[in-house]
Length: 317
Ligand SMILES: Nc1ncnc2c1ncn2[C@@H]1O[C@H](COP(=O)(O)OP(=O)(O)O)[C@@H](O)[C@H]1O
Ligand code: SF4
Ligand SMILES: [Mg+2]
Image (cartoon, rainbow, N blue to C red; front, top):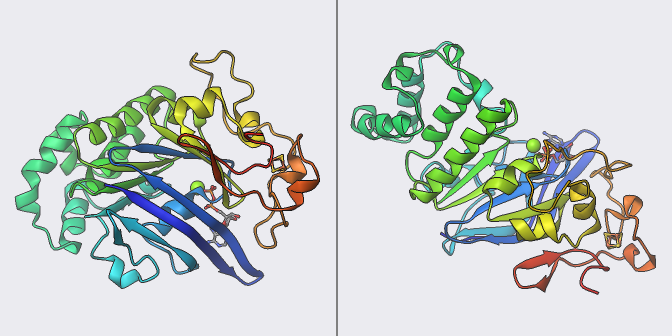
């Protein structure tokens, strides 16, 4: 599987004008790659994930293309996308586990989902039970109501469901955020195991928790205000970040390579710019300790070393 995203631009229509939530985003995900997508709240992570699978009706595709294994995804056409969802691209949306219908047993929810995709519950059940067992869940969860399951169990159910058809790409949006730390680890490891078993062949793990994604992702992509700031192999992003924003995110790591504490993406003075009327030039300029005259122009997102891309005039110079 290869995911290729080129110059993706997506906005939200609001009464107060358009919010340019993704503004020229280009990247690839290689076969078998787990890519972490990180950045402060509001930088466009969920918008990116959703735009690869389902634009909601407030979102508008402004431009750009997405291909999976060379085949273009008709992301601007909700109906045409039906052929690809669940089978080729699948998403665990942010808050998915709290969105499980509380009045239906898990088995019933699965049957409804399969039915919507023209699949038979009876025929799928053996594989479903096998995968539930793999993530440590007994067959009896199918008879349970969502409220009877812990957060970690629900998140595992959602993961099994969203990958039942072995989609090429899985977008997992904040799947560990509402869980306690040890459960977070277990769910994160399950993502890796599903990739290793070939249940999914590429993954975008969207999170505001860089320390968690560092443990499981092959690459990390850092977003800032609707654009890409930096992308590189995970250890490079964490130990040798080049973008000033990434450096500030990572800055307080106790020791290189050590398990850094439960650090969240907070603590950088100032706030990201609004996306209704974003500033010209580098969007990080108002908060950047290295800003200089040239930053009034938008820095291109360019490769400064092998597999290492950065959007900053100071990077690589
Ligand atoms: N339904 C919506 N209507 C208008 N603006 C939205 C909507 N959803 C998100 N946004 C805006 O789009 C930007 C990106 O949001 P989002 O993708 O949810 O960020 P993240 O997931 O990184 O927190 C933010 O400025 C947010 O306010
Ligand atoms: S381009 Fe300029 S303002 Fe932007 S991150 Fe680099 S140095 Fe800072
Ligand atoms: Mg989000």
